[in-house]
Length: 450
Ligand SMILES: Cc1ncc(COP(=O)(O)O)c(C=O)c1O
Image (tube, rainbow, N blue to C red; front, side, top):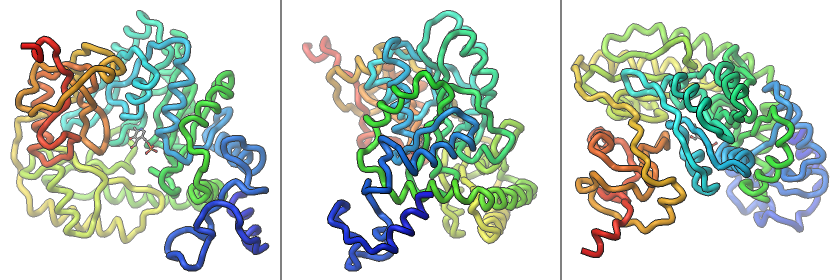
C-alpha cells in the first residue's frame, strides 16, 4: 500500500517544489528518514480526509481488530483519547473515568469542562494496578447518568480487565465505553483481545514495530464516526508524518512476519518466566500480559529504581521503575540474544541481593475532590514547599512519569496520605513532576488578605 506507492513515486524522480523544506536533500544526514518523508502530494492521499490509500489502510486496521471503522493517528493515542472524549461528552458533561487513567484522559476532562467521577481501582501488593472495583462500577452506573466510562486495559504493567463484563454493564446503563488500549495494540495476536467497546484507542508504537507515535482509534459505534473524525482533525496535526504512516503500513503488509515473531516471543517468555530467582520475582497471573515483564523487588534490599540501574550496568535499559518493581517491555521484535542477556543479568543481580521486609506499601489513594479540574485550573495558584502543602488544594497535576497517572488532580485536597506517597516516590528516586521541592496549590484568598 503506502510503502509501495512511495517506492514507485521515488522511481519517477519528480523534483519536489513543495513541502517539506528538507527537499530530501543529499546535504542532510542520511541516517534520518528525509528520503521517505512526504506530504499530501497527488496520489499520496490526505489522512484528515482519506479517499485512497488511507481508506485501504484503515479498512485493514478495522479488520484486524474486528471493529466497524478505524481512524489512523500520527499523534499517538493522546490525540485519539482527546477526540473520543470530546465527541462523546458534547451534550452530557458527566463522565466516569478509571482513577488510574493516563493524563491524556484528565486533560480531556479539563478542556471539555467535564464533571468527573472516578472509578475505584484495585492494586496488588507491589502497587501495580490489577483491576477495577466492579461493585463501585455497578453502583456508579446505576445511580448516575454518564455520557461515557473511560477504562484502561491493559494497564501499563499488563493487567487486562474483563471488558466484556464492563461493556455489558455500560450498555445496560446507556453509557458509552471508551477503552484506552494504548498498551494493547499487539493483543489481536492473542486470545486476550476482545472487541467489546464503543471506541478503543491503541498505540501501535508501544507494542508493535511502528514509529513513535503511531496509533489508531477503533470504532464500533458508527453513529459517532463523523463527529469523531471531525474531533480527530482538531487534535491531529494537519501535516501527518508519512514516515509514521509508512511504519503502520509495514505492519499491515507484514502480518505473517509479526505472527511468526510473536510465537518466538512466546517461547522466549516461557523460558524467562521459568527462571529460578530467589529474591526478585517475575510477577505473573491469569489476567496479565506476559510481555510486560514486571519484576518485583518487594521484600528485597533494593527498590525498582536500583534494579533498573543494576540492569543498565548489564547493558539493559528498562521501561520504568516504581518503589517496589521495575517494568520491562518485550515485543515481537525482541531477539533471542536480548532475552539471553536479560536472563543472565537477572540471575547475577538476584544472587547479589538479599531479602529485606519493608513496611511501606504504595497504593493509589483517591483524594477528596473540592473543585472540578476545569474549575481549579481557572483559579489562581502558587508554588509552596511540599512540606507545607497538607490541607491545601492542588493547583495542578502531580504524577510520576512514566506512567503519567495523576497522584493528584487540580482541585483535590492534599492530605498526609498523598504526601506520604509523594515523599515515598522521592525517597525512592522516582521522577515526580514537582517544581524543585514545590507543589502548585490554589491561593486561598482569605489567607492572602490576612
Ligand atoms: C494508558 C495510556 N494511555 C495513553 C497514553 C498515550 O499514548 P501515546 O504516547 O501514544 O500518545 C499512554 C502513554 O504512555 C498510556 O500509558
